[in-house]
Structures are given as C-alpha cells and as structure tokens.
Image (cartoon, rainbow, N blue to C red):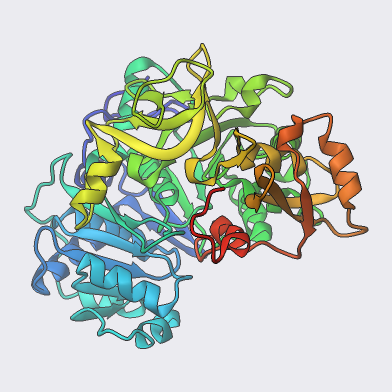
Length: 527
C-alpha cells in the first residue's frame, strides 16, 4: 500500500497517512499534483491547484467579513464546485460549514440558520424566494454563489495561518428530523480520516481509492454520505464528479462518458438507474466499485444490481452521528443466496458494535436489541443540545435507535428503528423484514409497514403498497406470496394500495405520518 507523497502508477491504492485535516489535504495535493483534476461539475473543471488557491482567497474573504474560528457558514444551493471551495475555506479558518438541504421550506431553513447561529450565508439565486419567505431575518452577510469569484477575488491566494487539528469542528449537518426539530451534528476533521486510516493500517480494502479513479457523488453534500465520499476522494487525490442533483439518465451518461470507476449512491438511485429505458450492462463497464447505503436494500434489487453491473459492491451503514460509515458489508460477502446478503456488514478495524436491551445490558449474538457503535469518527456533539448529546453519546458509544442483532462472526443484521417496532400478541415485529419481502414481489415497487391498534392482538400489521405499472396485485395475491416467507404473526392483516408514500425533503419515508392515521386521539401510541 502506497504511503509516500510520490506519484503513483495508475491503479495503485492511495493512502496518505500524513494527512489528518482537510487543510493538509488541500495543501498536499496542490503541491504534489497541481494540474490533476479535482472536481468536475457540468462542463466546469477545477484542478487541485485551482481548488487550493480559490479556497485560500475564500478563506481570506471570510476573515475580512469578520468571521473567526467557531463561526458558522451556511451553504444553500445545489451541488457545485463552490460547495467544495467553501468546505476547504472553512477548514482553513476554523469556521464551520453548515450545508442546508435545498429542498427544505422557508420555516425549516430558518430553523437551521437560527439554531446554528449562521453569520454568513452562501446562497444560490434559485433559492432566494426560500430565504425571502422566512419569518426571521437572514444572516448578517449573504453572498450569492454566482458572484462568489468577484467577492473573493480581491484577496490573495496564500494559505491562511490558521492550522486545524483533527479535533477542530469543520462541518455541522442537520438530521432529517422526522420527529421534532432537526438537530445539528457537529463533525471534526478526524471524522473524514479515521476510518480510512484504520482500514489502511489493517490492510483492509473493503472500500479503497486508486490512482486514476473518477468518483461519482450521487448523494448530495447536505447528507453525511455525500460529504464523506467527497472528502475520501480528495484525501486520496482522485477526481470527484459532482452532480447538481441526481438524475438517473444523467448519472448513467456520466458513468459511461467520463469513464467513472467508483460511485456512492443510495439503493433508490440504483433502482432508478437500472430501470431507466435503454440502460444495460454496457453502460457500466468502467465501474470497478459501487458503495451504497443510507437505507435498507431489498435482496431483489441487490441481486439485480450484481447481475447487471459487473463490479464490486460494498454496503455501508452508519449515521450522521457516527460520521457516516461504521459498518461495511465487503465485496466478498456479496454472494447471491448467502445469508450475509441480508446483513448490514461488520465493523471496520477500530470500530466496535454491540446490541443492548432496554436496561443497557449487552446482548449475546442472535438477540435483537438497540445497536450501539463505538467509532473514532463519531460526532463531537449535537449543537447546543447537551442533554440530547448525553442521551445519544454515552461513554464514547453512539446509541443509534436502530434495532438489530449480531451473529457469531460479528456481522450486524438490522431489523428496524426501535421506535417503529410493532408489538403483535407480545411478539416484536420489525417492518423492514416485511417490507423487504413484499418488495421482492414482481408487482410491488415499494412497501411501507406500520403498526395499527387491534383490540385482540394489541397491534396489527398494516401494509401500504405502491404497485408497479400494470395490473395491481390483490390482497389475496400478496398474502399468498408472504405466507411461505414469513411467520404468521408477521403477516399484514390489511393491505392498502397507494400511488406513493409520503417523504420528507431529504427523501426519507415519513412512517410516523402513516402510523398516525391509526393512532390519532389515542392516549399512547402502543397497544
């Protein structure tokens, strides 16, 4: 494994252990490979020298605007090279980048700006109406992304004197907030180096970066997955291809036309690319590895992906609070028919996983409990919420709120969010298992399962089913399909065909909204 700063032959694995902050990353690659392409966005390309010097000017402009270490800089816009200029500029000044989901409404954006105490907002013109629609005043300084070059061009391109440490905060990402207001997760530089370093030290190549790699980022930068994947490629010195917003046809075209070798996507993006008219195996021949995560994947979709796309697949599992990935299902475990195809994966070197019961006692393999993760990439805190931080981060362990179990070999199998468990006649039923099975039915595009009150059994299983085009399945069809595949107490008592399921602006299913239909007016939401 390469560990020096010398140029490498194409295909060599890339790891630069001397880098421990994003400041180091920018400086190192601008000096080592100034003419190499760092970012491609639409028809624009930035070299590593461009990215370094532009972010230097940007950093000086932030300082001139009165911002200092710890101040927040928000970014409200679609993906572009400006996002990465802002990231490195914040790293070089000790300010903290707050990426804002551009799909959010004005009140939601206002909450993030106010909660974070943002002092400077980087704003794409298209989202001006959102800011103007806020009931509160915008931050004291608003810089239009379209005029960013003019705003910072008066400053020199020398690197600022500020020197970050691995524990210096650099980003603050807001959780989706399916219940309650979103929380700001503060991440330090170490988040973007810890897993990489542990894998390299152990000689593990579950996820790797190689000379000549061109990486597609399908996940937006306001999600930890998108930010993490971009930083990993910058740290390695490869090329990042940023999509303004994910579109399946465009993604396939980019993979084919640019010779993209690696991609980071969520399962829904895989499904959309594979079902795009006219798309086939020949469109994916340059890919050597796909990294996927962010939501459960059905076995049917995974097996189809393995058949159509002839490359390695690596599944990642983690949270914003864990700094993205903490568990990985490596390529070698992606064997159709293997029980491991249902696993989230196993912890990386240096990461520990345990499951606990309601009293906090660690459970043996096979018993379902709350998943807890101990990772060197974990968050610093929830911004301004010490009590919530103490609930989630306990003695270095992140309590995920996910239900799962470990097998004897240390593989983690997720069952669902603990709060979404359905109690049927004293048995815990986990929606993800039922949904995964339903979605393997050829007439089902998507399924969401919730618990509803039942006088006899406590709760019954209610399934919302989005059918594929064509004749929809009947309840009798679905029931007959599930009977040989699931225990009787897991079978839905009712099926409801719907055109779509509700989602929040981040694309996550609003399961609680579906569940509340049955529980409104109840004294409690369990029976």
